Length: 274
Image 1: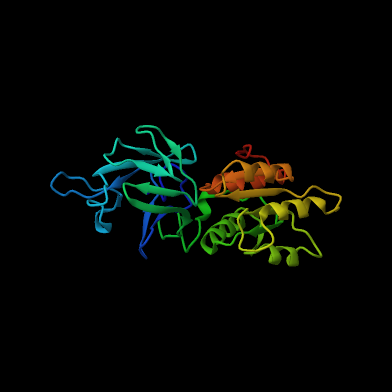
Image 2: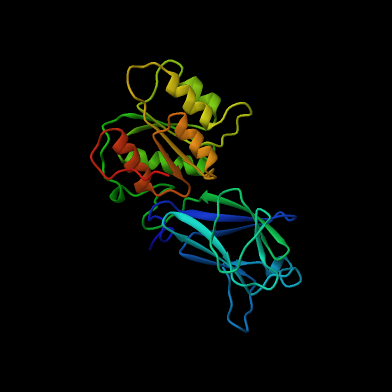
C-alpha cells in the first residue's frame, strides 16, 4: 500500500481544508485525484472533500464541483464547470484549466471558503513505521555528518529527522530561527535543511540563509530550503541569498535525502531544483 499515492511512497502527506467560519478541518490523504463537491448517495457521488455537511447545497456547491490533482510533485486544482464557480485567492477559475495549489491558499467553492494547508501526518503503514520511515526504503549513504533541520511543524520535522538518520546522518531539529542561531553560534553543522516560513517575528528562513552564507568557515555549507512558500519570489530570494537547493512541499523522502547526499558529495541522482 502506498502511503500517499503518486507524490512519494514514504511521506504521508495530507491536504487540510479548514472551513472558514467553522471550527472544522477536512483532511484528505494525497492521491492522484481528489474530488471536491457534495455527496449524493442516489447518484453514487462520494467526493473526497464533501461539503454537504457545511451547507453545500444551499451555498452553491455542485455535486462534482472541482478536482484536485497530484502529479509531477505539484498539486493543482480545476473547476469542473460548476454552476456557481470556484475562486483561488479571489481569482475566478476558468473551468477545465489547472491552477497551482499551494500551502496557505484560499480556495472558494461556491460560497464556502477553504483555507489550504499541506501537512505530514505520520501513520502506521507498510512503509511508515513508528512515525517514521522504514529502513528498507532509504539506503545508508552518510557517515555521521551533522544535519541541522529548522522546521516549526513537529510532524514534518520528525519525518525529516528519521529519514536523514536512516540515511546515516546525525540530525538536530529546532523550530525557530533564534534556536538555530543559538545552536550554531560556536559550530556550524555539515548541512542545513530549513523552511522559509518560521514563527519568529523578526527573522525568517531567508534571513538564516543570508546569515549562514556570511559565516567565514573556509568551507561551503550546503543549504537546502524545503518550503510551502512556492510563490516564486520567496524561493528566488532564497536562491539569491545562497541556498543551494529549493524544494517545494510536498517533497518525497527520496528527493530530500538525495539532495542532501548530492550536496555532501555522495554519488546519487541530482537533487530536484525549482
